[in-house]
Structures are given as structure tokens and as C-alpha cells.
Length: 607
Image (cartoon, rainbow, N blue to C red):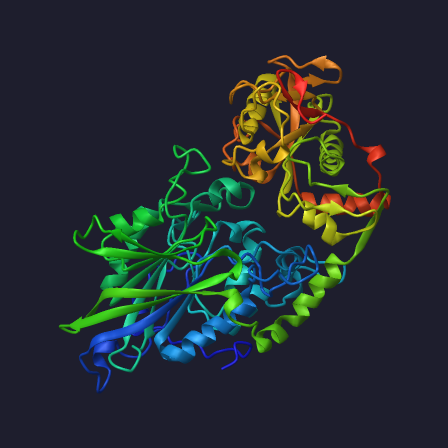
């Protein structure tokens, strides 16, 4: 069967009639056929097997196409649901279609210009919440025939109206057991589902319970979209609550879709919210779990076995496919049936890479209208650049292309503060070099070029901060760099300590400062100078910042608790596009300034 033709929905088992309370947004499942023990002619079987296919963190990658470079991804880096469609069909052909369950582990509707066009609209078509079109990611997942999914943190990026539209377009249940409607105290999404699958080669059908959980960080990262509306509870505690419900409702096997890293520190203060990365903890601490599908961390970890603390002597499979549809994991779960009940006795896990299978032609044809709409959108010329502006050195020196971002952010905030008590405060901008290969070519600059520079769907906010707080903020960012002894010739490639991602290398404009890499972490940033004078520790400025950082993303000090003075819900990428279109030109002479430099014992490192 070609993936591009919508597959008939698998029927939800009768055991799922008891799905958790009908709170706001919860789909109450209708009665289905009799439970597996009542199937006529069912036989007791040992050595039964079914296959669980998983994806995670697809992030809008429908086709194997890089919209920022206008070309397919290179060999060895293939990705996208067009490859997933072929891989899933191959697994179904090998194991039998009724013996395969396909699940998605979240972060699906954000991440590419295609999903941005669906959420925000283009010059020729409005967002799907206005047009009534089916969300392209729902079209894609339904075409492949997914059986269940969970919300990731990025499902909340575009607001709840879009999330609800996406949810209603899906043929599969979209789960979120630890997401609560603040007004009612009830689940805001369906907590779990039970799907029936027939073992490879036949036999008594298996009732597979699927519980969906998402990292609580959305409470921080998308505060403006969820505050007062949704609450995000502890994932481990939610699993302990709902797994017994699923077992009581008749599940033979329990799979937890955990949009959470396997383990590790949170990117926010754990005293504010439950931990961010707990997939291994769910496997270890929650009785009754057979498989955990992990995600969120964008790591390629197809198979791990975690010793269960809740059921000593047993192990739980944790599987995490690679992000962007670069791989699927196909876990053949081996079962033993005794006394009318199945139990998992082991598993064989296969990882299928996108590059190992071709794109599914029927699927790509189905998605072609959205692909073409996106191509037309990113090919739109917005300005002419006086010279080539590159981000190649943006990690090591103040660059004009980053100054373009700063100038737009500062200008928008200044305009927004007019007539307010903060209007006379200096405005400082903060931004990070997301992509070293971003470039505005000399001549025509397109939306693709702008989106390649600012790849995230962040909105612009501003907070009031003191000089001391601003200094702490920059010291935290300077952790990015390794320590360089005085007199070191400083090969730029050696300056990174290798422990901080580029998107957490925050740089500022509107304030001048040196970062002395001869000094240890915490003592690197020199005096801050604003408008020609040293900024005192109690002096105040307004910091223009994106919503992710302001909400606590990355753990930068003070910014999450600083008073919010500006928030018009404006997409930063769109502000950059608007500036380019309004002026028609991008000329460094209009905005480029050198605000910061790297030094060693006061001597410039890079000239």
C-alpha cells in the first residue's frame, strides 16, 4: 500500500471504553468490539510478536527538502516523513499491516517554513485556523497511518487555537496525560488510548495501552500561550496515575510516549517546575510499563534497557529514534501468553535510516501543494543587500548580520515603549547566532535568507534589568568560550569550550563590553558602557529578548523574573522580513556597530 493513500483507521479496542474522565478537550472513545479474550477461535500462543514503530521530533520535516538552501538534504543527512512513509510501509509489508502500531512522540507542527506558513499564513493564503484547511502535518501523519501521538513542547508555540485545529484534523488520538485544563482541573488532552494489534502470524489480538506525557517546560517556554489556561504536571507522577488505569482497562502491553529526554539537567529551575528529562525515570520507577519512547533531546538512541526499580528483576525498553524523521525505530516486541494474558518477554529493535529507503512517491504527491506554497513563500524577494553579510564569524566577533537583528529588535521595542514610564531608558538587544552558515547575499535577499538567519519561531519581548543583572547575564553567556592564556594566537575554531550550543551564545547590542578569555568563567566580562558612560550596577536598561529566553529557556539569570515591559506577540522573523520589505534595502552603514569583542588580558584576540 502506498503511504500517500490514507490508510483505514485501526479500530480502538473495547477496553478503551473506560478512558479517563471527559474533561475539557478529552475525546471519550465509543464502545468497540469485544475484548481479545472473547474473539471467536482465539488460540493460546507463545512466541507471539508485534511491532512498535516510532518517530519523534519531526519538527515539520514533511519532505526531504532544506527550505533554507533550496535543495534536498545531502547524502547521509536524509530526513523527512516522505522517507518515514516508505520505511513504515516496508515494516508493514514484512510484519503484516495489522501487526504494526505506529506512534509519534511529539514536536511535530513547528520547525520548518512549511509549518510556519500553515500557522501564520503567507501573502497568498492565511493560516489554517482562518482558511479551514487541514493542517499539513495532520494530512501527513494520517496518510502514513499513525495510531497515536503525544504533544511535544513545540505543539504550544502557535497558541491553543492552532493546537486544537491540528488535534481535530488528526485521525489518531493526540495524548497528553500530564496536561490539565486550569479552569476545570480535568485533562486538557486525552490521557491514554488502547489500540488492538494482531500478532505476526495470527493469534489472539494484543491490547496495547498507550499513555502520552510531555515535558513540563512548556509552562515556561510558552508561558504567553498557556498561562492561566493549561498546567503541566510531573511526568513520572502522571505515569504512576494513568498506567494502572490502562492496565485495569485491559491493556496487555503498556507503551509510554514520553516527550522528554532520557535523563539530565533541566533547562529551567526544577524548584519552579518538575524535571524536564525523565524518560529513564519513568522506565525505572513506574510499575506496569513495558516500553518508553523518548524524545525532546534530539538524540539518536534506538535501544536501551532500564532496570525496573518498581518491578525488580525486569527491564524496560527505552527507544529514541533520530529527530526530523531521519530514522524510525521498529521494536519487535516478543510476548508470552499465559492464563489469558500477554506479557512482554523481550524485544528486537531495528533502526531504519531515512537514507536507506526512497521517498514515497504517493506521499510526496499528496504533500506537493503545501510544498509548492512553501517554496513560493520562501522565494519571495524582500530587499536588496548592499554587500554580502555572513554569520560565519558571528561566534567570534561582532558581525553586521547579527547587528541587523539587534537593530530591528531595538527599534520595535523603542517604538512600543513610547509614552510609557520606560520610554527614556536605554534599550539593549540580545540575540544568538543560530546558524554559522546564514548569509544575506549581495543583491536580492529572500524570505529564505532571513529565515535561514532566524530559524526559530520566537516572539519579541522586553524586560527591565539593572546593570548588575545585565553583567551577570553576559557572564553566563561567556561560558561558551574556552579559557585562552594571554598571548595565544587564538585559532577561532578552538575558542568554543564545546559545552554550550550556539543558540545559547547570547550577544548584546546597545551596550559595549569586552569578554576576556584569559579569565575564568564568571570573571570575563568587563565594564558595560551605554551611551558613552559606564553602566552602574543599579542603573536600569530595557532588554529586548525573545520569548524563549525571557521565559527561562537556557537558564540565563534574572531575565525570567525581570519586569516585563513589552510584549506585542510579534514574531521576530516577521519583524526582520517587515523591516527588509519596508526599506527595500539592507545596508550595514545604517545599523552595523562594534559593541563587543573577545580579548585576552585586554588585548584583542582576533584583530
